[in-house]
Length: 83
Image (tube, rainbow, N blue to C red; front, top):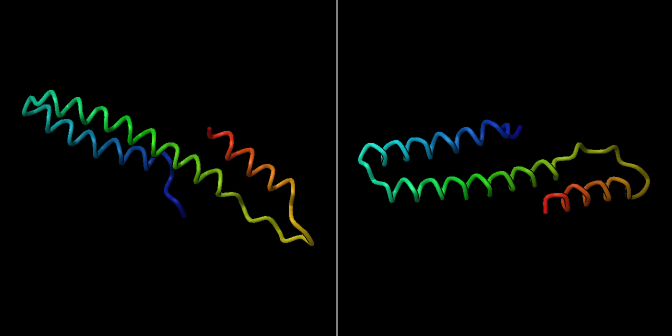
């Protein structure tokens, strides 16, 4: 079972918070700014990946005699909504 979205984002926050606190202790303003920018970039990328994961994680539909056009349209709609 995949990890919950909030747990993943909390882990990202904890990693960057620890590094930021260390940079703050040694008063390295440049490193603090770099870490802040990197955190924002990583958070955005991670949220996009989680959105893609959620869009592709549709429950398996029972097999029917032919393709499911409504299900295909729903998947396309979810994926294009990410743009």
